[in-house]
Image (cartoon, rainbow, N blue to C red):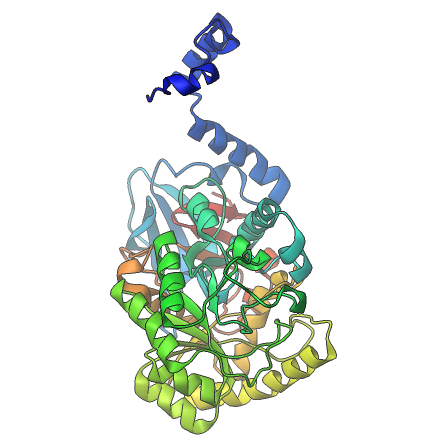
Length: 484
């Protein structure tokens, strides 16, 4: 307790006010005996999640009391191109305890017969925007910030129910949502957060209007900055400050804007953003915390500048030439690419100029994937569904399109153990240091059971409502239409 000085004694209420009455004291006693703030919030979350959002149900609200044994399955383990037969998966707590032979028994375990279906690791989206995927850009810029986060919480559960148990969030204020998911208050994927996207003035993360210029030392932060969507920083010192702020908030990696884009109104695709010195400042600050920087850029010039600055992951890059792709490979960097094909599932943009840019990128997507494969670049797959409420449902469908260039086993490997390797690049800042994207003893119990064999038919991941019979994340069942 602290006491106010005599100057402020008139603000105290030591007399017979209502908060000292017997009824209030009885309420305090009840709270002390069990109705804690934590349990109330947990109860509200559990009661609202199933009827409003659909699918999580009461099973989500509690950690299984006994081990779970999934039997009668064919296993894609995250790496092997052939299904493993004759073994079941034993889950204890949040981890896979062991793979057990089909004839073995496990005492005190709840057994779920999977009926000869395929079991695989939960999928990972390497380029996702947890807060921004399920809302329009107008909503993001104009709605109350709590509303934006409530919509994101709904979309987080839908993300898991599409089979994505982990996402690498590369822009947006996802820290609070991540915490609520990690604490088991709401359903959602594991989140590797970048926090605010670091952008130069006029860069891809500068969402201000022309009327907001010029900025002065007395100017208020823009709406996007206030919301934590982006952070505008110019010069080495300011870049250091903004990167360190995101690390302080809990960023597992840092996202900077190194070139133009489609979603922003004023920066053309070919615009180079951030000097090499500024990029190196971001890389240095991240490295001091044991993690790395990823960069948004499409062009060869942007990629080459980022590589020269020590950036470890290229996001997009569809306009890279072959020499630049060789440099990505030689640097041992990652290339996080998306199925930008300007088709019926693409993000929608109102401006003809934006649609023209989108078409240009789409034409480069096929060439980029082919060059990445040719030069053995470390590839990661993500969707980058952005400001597209209807598009989020196509998450699996869009990633299945990579079967145009990879066989189904490689697509699944990239979406599980491959993307997990990129997520683990966050090193000391990795919020989930256990093994992701694998079905093996000691790995996180993030598991899907599907009708059919996705190694033969990758389109199974595109229709999760129909094909995914069991979805488990962290040992908790989010969906189960199998008989127990």
